[in-house]
Image: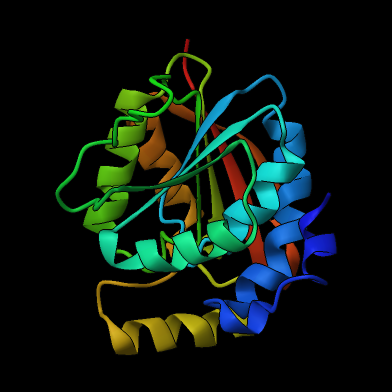
Length: 215
């Protein structure tokens, strides 16, 4: 049964909610269904409310989907998992980019062959963006993938007026936040043996970047 069917049976208004997740969950899933063929164990970095994970896992039945986030967000993720359980969906692991290494999966004892993160790079500081790529480059095996979703600037400029307004709002709230430049992210990734292999244009002026670890 798909999560959209389950929505008819569960009062989602009582669960932690993100409109952005509702809007982008299906377009992202359609890319993941292509990019994760042959992959088996995905670590989601920054699972947020948990809404993405309960949509992705049942629609990616060959993938073990491991959520993670800072512990203060775990109650939200667990609430969604309780409402929409799936046999290949796992409770969040504690993961704080500022202090932690890639969390070890004690339930399955399997290495992660892919990592996914959505709407994180423009929220965290650039120093933490750098740390994310360091950790991914170290933890992923050869040919492993890091898949990143969110807004990005291109050729040193905003891709839309909406993104420009969004960036100003982010920086007003936290000067360390802000929409990242694709070229800088790609350069950073290459320093850690991660090559940009595919870019997908997504709704609302977002993009999905697929990096692959060198052999």
